[in-house]
Length: 256
Ligand SMILES: [Zn+2]
Figure (cartoon, protein in one colour):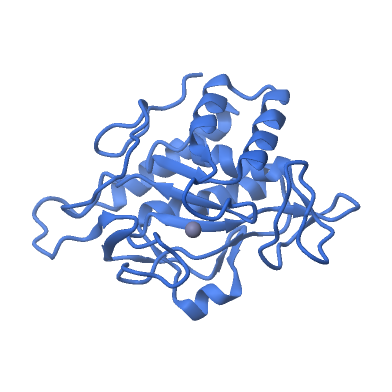
């Protein structure tokens, strides 16, 4: 567990060093502005459609919804690499991020400012082998697929490794991992039984949330980061701000 945290911190240091041009730059403000549901994105990162341990769901390319802040893209790329290393299997399948310049995106109320992404759950076949997600399918609180003609099961272990990489991220800081409450409970119970770090469990309990005003998210995770340190003027976070997250969007590291 300690190794993961150290690796994550190292990667972030590299990203932080390379992503800020310095105060002398006179270019128009780059980065994310506004809120997730009414925002914009300048200087977006064009996330490759496939990379180490991940690929995008097919329709995302047609919708041109694979743009994000550098910080969100780096976080997801890191999660894919952690999965590949710790619990090897088929790639993580990513859904919509944002449009190149942000703003309204079809099928979504948010995803406007490069700080949101949908991620299809990782699954196993009835024999227990990890399988690549071909589509969005729904799971109940026991991890059973309840979509028609679907026989896969929710892969609690690999989905937890995805969640925990987001939870331990210091830059960017994650605000929400939207998911149905029965699946949140399944993940947390499993992680607790594995002896997961209590601070990681406590933070995950706050981040994993079934939204009250949209679909229950029983067929994908929806991840949202806070306005990162490198942001355009007018970047706005909705409440809440977790006690471990600073006003400029950094999360305090988890104690060992
Ligand atoms: Zn979403």
